[in-house]
Length: 434
Image 1: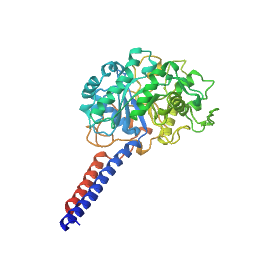
Image 2: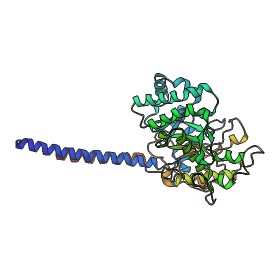
Image 3: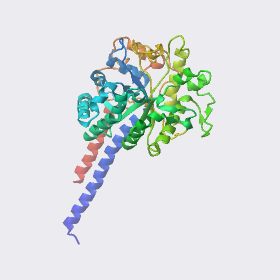
Image 4: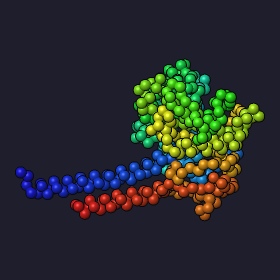
């Protein structure tokens, strides 16, 4: 039998371990609270900057807050933009532009890219993912196609070395043109010529837990076949009866979820193992408000209906007919009209806002309070109506109609003070127990 002194020490250590477990539980609970606040934000927006008259990044923040959007996809790693989002709580997908892919295909160069473009902004700027290239597999650039997966793997490996691979995902965004068949959704299949590229990418997603991103635009499908596709189906109108899939028997209420399920079916056909774990997310979706004379569906009314319905659909937190338990996530395209984008006139008219910060049209739907991840820290700017001034007329842009400022989610600084107090309390109990 152990001597009394040993029993006392054992009892003390047992109590200490129990209290230490309590302390860990308090901290983990606090961390879970912050994580849950972010995960509630399912609607994001694309912040493209191919324009000669766009506002400074700081002026963008009140517009996002007014929309209630706390997730933003960027197409590059511009330091001025990343600095502007510091201490805002906004979650960023940061683009690695096509022209950078060849420079990050090996681990050493990937380390250097992260050191220059990501590490200086952490942890103040909340970077959740890197999107390597954009629509590379449908761009007909063989060198880029060959570099895509090695670049993704090298960046992921470099993040793993830094202990950031669970914090920052590495993925890429695909054009829906990677599908050879998309109707009905159950017949979804990738283009055969792209399978040698896509199958290893699916293996990568399954191994790393990163999402498969697709740029999905019902607008293009409708514009290509306006007689065969009902406008209400393409605009995601809730009252539309929907279209049945003759093979699966599933009813599709709108074209967007049909497109997503076509991708899911394509993944299953190409890589059964990956299809069990890989999640499809919409990296771009939108509708233009203006276009060339022959782009008759590109109107402010249709754009307002589509984007309002898309936000409502995603904010409901529901899945697709095929994946009802996997909440749909999407990034609306785009924040601004961009006057330097090439191509049809519609390409320059996808924005919710004009460059002067005024809405292109009014949305009929306002995102719920928990969609925004805004909060925390002093970012050097204030919301209109809160005692601060935003230059360039942006007060008008965020205080009119459906763009008025909405309440943000709990301030991350407040949460952190609460967590510190909780930890301090637990430590005080430990000290008292000692």
